[in-house]
Length: 76
Image (tube, rainbow, N blue to C red):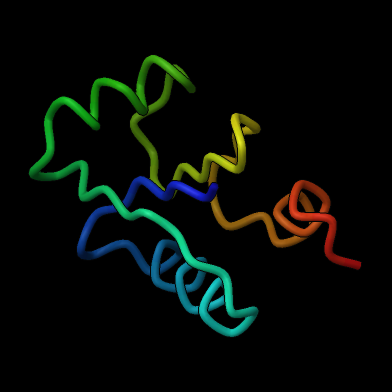
């Protein structure tokens, strides 16, 4: 399962979501600018306030790191 913690104005968040869509991957999106419990969850997982934070089956990627995302998804 892919979870992405985002904010509406984050360009890298949009890039990540567009990338997932281009690969036909579904994800759950959490807007941490409005969803405070999810914001706290994100900070607990990473210790950071920056977005996007992408959780791929419990493996965390901070930012839009395509290489790391592909590694965690098993995409070559």
